[in-house]
Length: 120
Image (cartoon, helix red, strand yellow):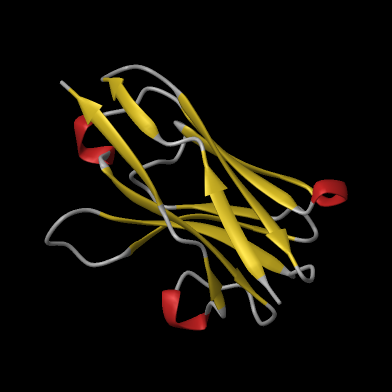
């Protein structure tokens, strides 16, 4: 059975850093990604990483967030620096066996989400 389990969320102040983790069990994936969803908004792409270590970021987080992968642990990370109040959201880990994409519809598996709250 495939499971994605996130951890690392919390309440921080603007300018602080957080690191999220997502560990997959049951199989490995070609691409894993982070999405987020703020109250009243649609789920949006944050970052993705392919098995080849190709990475891609949303413009809103580029140069502040870094996605990385530890294949031996089947885990991805999201290092979030210089956090802003607008980064407040539930962050979801996702995985796909298919093509690299930013579209959440393309992802086959999802974690339960972890809350990130940034106060001003």
